[in-house]
Amino acid sequence: MINSQATPETASLTIGSDLRAGSPNAAWRGLNLPGGNGPTRERIDRLFPGSDVAGHVLDVLASGVPSENLAVRIGGAGEERFLWASFHPYPSTAKPKNVLMQVQEMSAHLIVDGKTGEVLEANAAAKGIFGQTPRSPGSPWFAEPLQSQEARAISLAQAAQCGSHYLGKFKHRRPDGSEVELESILVPVDGPQNRPAARSLRQ
Image: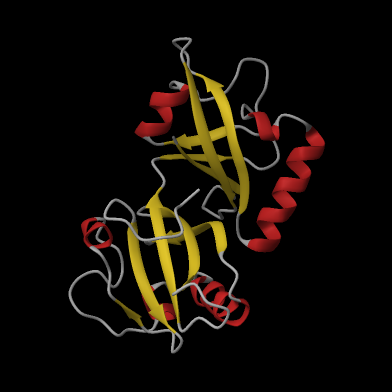
């Protein structure tokens, strides 16, 4: 869970009620995120095209209620990055004038076939956690939250409807026998191989 208050370690950006970005912190600039290269008053929908960041900001401004555990995809095909995002009223009042967007970049990415669970691609971080073939023996859906057919169907439907689906925290045993706690988001992805689902994780 991303903290509700900005810290030097958490990449943070303040967004006004006019949807214009301002005040990125050093961690935001360090990740080379949109709006972090010098002063900006660019609209958030232009900084994050093709995402629902503006919609999340408007929801928080209208309700005063945070939105957490959301995936934001940036970058073009082949250069995609996935951010774990949280949006909080700032300051925390019933009628906020600003929204604090906080993100962490997801370290491990898996491209998974949405029908079979076959792992089509895995980045270096995912291979480090799951091995060269990041699947549990005997089960194409290796993650605890996706091991039942019913859970997979619900999760995939939610991801398709909302753009991403938070799978929560779960334990996973690495190929070397050590155990690690992971937190994961399921994100639909369309690609040249008709890849219908991607999973992004963080430790």
